[in-house]
Image (cartoon, rainbow, N blue to C red; front, side):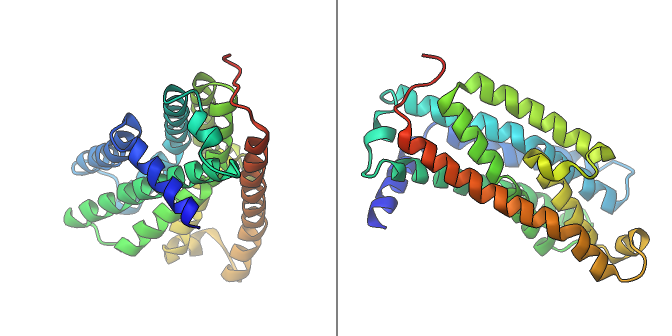
Length: 260
């Protein structure tokens, strides 16, 4: 445990003054600020505004993850051609584990800063339908829904190239946006990049009783369990398999990418 904490601390110090850190700081501030500015004069109702904001975050997340993991891979390569990553611990999988944990931790802070700062600003504008707790849990849901996407992009960024990772992130964001229109009904559980948008949509339904009543008839709780159960189990299973697979791959990786 002490070894993991030591490596985590070293990783944090390494990225402290890099663009990787600034991305996690500037994106939440800029994103929530732009939406709050627009919503200050937008004629939409409160629920529609919140829906638009959360869906935008869910759509942008895959691309942002691609950029972040690409920057991380580039940092490791420029710092010594992956020497710290491959030889920083014994077993070496600890180094990739801590690298991934640091990225996930920064991602969690970033998405919470995005949703909570938006929620605080929205309350100051006089909108109080959703509590600050709603925005906190919304951020957690978006982060949990992105774990598989993080695993995929860490692998692609290190094994292939940053360009492929960023390109894949753009495609994933496009798919996430298209699936929010209804094109992904029934198939979205097979696309990890679309999980955030759908799960956050469900969370908004749970916290909006009148919207639930308009969607479901009869036993609402049974209907929600039926619609939630399989996708949630699928998402958890795929996430666990993906992250374990990433560690197993790294244990055999020798620092070579397709760019070489």
